[in-house]
Image (cartoon, rainbow, N blue to C red):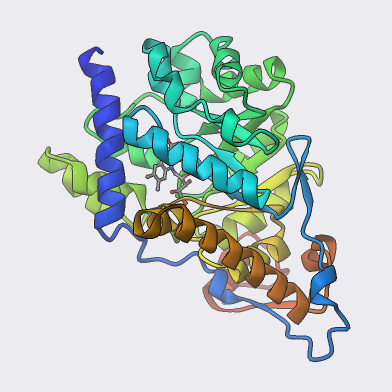
Length: 362
Ligand SMILES: Cc1cc2nc3c(=O)[nH]c(=O)nc-3n(C[C@H](O)[C@H](O)[C@H](O)COP(=O)(O)O)c2cc1C
């Protein structure tokens, strides 16, 4: 491997280690605690008949959940991807591998991502950065998808993280054009995602124009990637910037609401960034999301107790999601989108600043 590619593998290993060992949570919250679903004391719902199936990338998920992109490009990552793929198949949820950038230069690393064997029926997605769309021939993205027999590909946006990486990208021009081109080439099989800093209304408007059909807002409130990079940095200036921007980003609840306000109804909105429980998933769906996603929470469960504990985490999410549905008196996801709710505190301020609640700001 060249030094640059070796550094991708090394960086990925450092990320895993820091995420596992350090406190890399945002100080600011997802603001999902400002969403109060109204309790129904007389639900008239049979728990066993609650339906959570949803369509995603042309397939049916048994529950509206997704393990979002994490890793690949190292031996440990291969084992992790395989285990997460197995869990996803068993539970009927979607799975995305981490950035496949390393494959461009070193096709032999493809095997770290090639987990179709362990998720034969489920939704499997690849991953690449928007920067790579600009720096490599765009047609090669097709190979990334076919090389792992994926249903589509996630394209990540991560300017805040890159700006606090010594080796990070500094030029962001041309990414929207590249995304627009990719949408045409792949016939819509593209999911645009952030990595924990949220997607703002202006970007949502432009992605809508580009014809994007799947969007993971990946907001602030869970893993802070500027914090992760702060722990990695050796350069004092970069370390300081990591600290300064450690709480940078749009709260997950605000970003979900924004996506639903701006994107058309046929766009799937994935809510991630600090999704820790089935109640978080239920609130996200009520706010307008179609699927709840999570990365670090399942990684931590896996590191703590392997496949067994990670599976239990997914089972808990499903049980809690269904419990929230029963307690709001609905037995399907369409009903959950429309349940009565109250928004309080800081979330109201965020929504009012865009005029979405029709209230005047104080
Ligand atoms: C160890 C780790 C590695 C990650 N690597 C990637 C990646 O390669 N590509 C990507 O799009 N997102 C990556 N992410 C970001 C997640 O997909 C997610 O957007 C973010 O961590 C917020 O979700 P969380 O609060 O549930 O962790 C990674 C997350 C973790 C925890």
